[in-house]
Image (cartoon, rainbow, N blue to C red; front, top):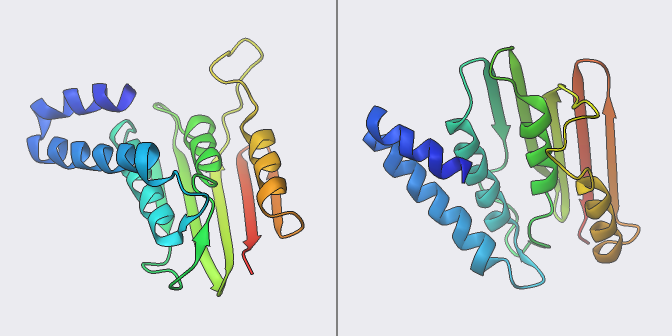
Length: 176
């Protein structure tokens, strides 16, 4: 709904950008509703979903937020992965790492250092929520850990660390 509201506002400012945003949202919804139903999807489709998501997030951010995304243009042919594994980490980066009034950043680096090994490294500025903020349930990482344990037991490493200014999450999956 936030994305639709952002697009609504964008129509008056830049119809061309609004058209592109609607196309990106359409691709994202198609993937979430239809294309992720198989147990595994091509890695390339998952990366395209991440790119579309990031582009939609850019709509709501000010110039105070720097976004860098790096991922291979093409993954090894035949590489399959469980769908929507990375989105919890990426959503958290935008939710807890951006500010409308303070300089902030989100850096996403996805790579395939060797065939069948996927790395997702996300670093963002850290704006921790206080105890009164009920904007999330706080179970995203727990659910991701359970999902990884079911799908890739002993073949993944999920690590998160933070200091007072930076939060970093790293996920490595060996699909071999």
